[in-house]
Amino acid sequence: MMTRGKVAAVFRTVVWSVGVSAALGLQASAETAGLGGTELPEDFFGKSESMEAPVGHNPEPGFPIFPRVGNLQAPVSIEYFYSSDCESCADASRALFTLLSQGEDVNVTFHGVGTSEEAYVDAIGEVVLFSIDPKLFELFHFGSMMAFDQGKTLNSVTFMGEIAAQAGQVDVLQARMEHYEEWTASLTLNSEILSALEAENLPVFVINDVKYEGFASLEDLVGAIRIANGEELMQQGVVPGAGQGR
Image 1 (cartoon, rainbow, N blue to C red):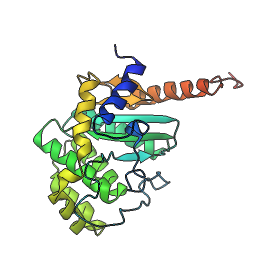
Image 2: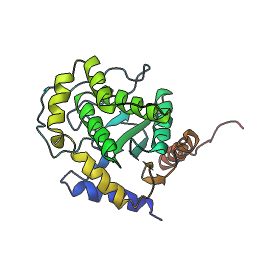
Image 3: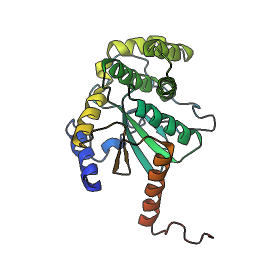
Image 4: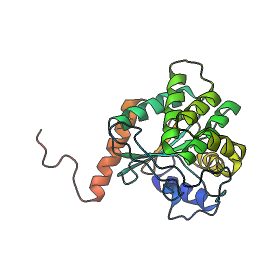
């Protein structure tokens, strides 16, 4: 069984291998990447900042961009590994959508791995959309995963274009997709980390350095978050439930 310390070490080692600071680890945020992070407001998608330069080429092509959703300062950090053609992953994304839309205080990093050619294209599109505007990533990821979960046929490339068109970002999307290798260094990292974690089944969650493999239900996810929240309180010297009536 992989211990918590080993899980944390895997993240540090793999990220170091591409020259990213170990102090950042997989906490390299959208803000760090120059993207402008987003905290989910009441309307869920809300507003978010686009990259300042609407260009096709990435000025830092080797820097991994990991899509992030939620509160970057939340006490619970979730690393989510998935593929868009994975039925259990669709369930997991639906559970995450529910938690986030209900205001759960978590920081979620998305690691698309793409277990098929179509899923890999989706993973590329997610990172590129996030590089343009985090809101576009959220619309694409949750929209396409929910369509898959409901058994609907969705042309992801068309869907991607429709989302970009609504935001007036079609030209930027096209330019960046033409140079997608410069924006998607994180995809190689995702596969390397998943392999190093010795994971066999998707989805995989790493919640505050504890690996959970194969579960996707809302109840399972909530339970793992509650455990992580309890441990965070204990580290702060607070006993969970203390002072509460029975």
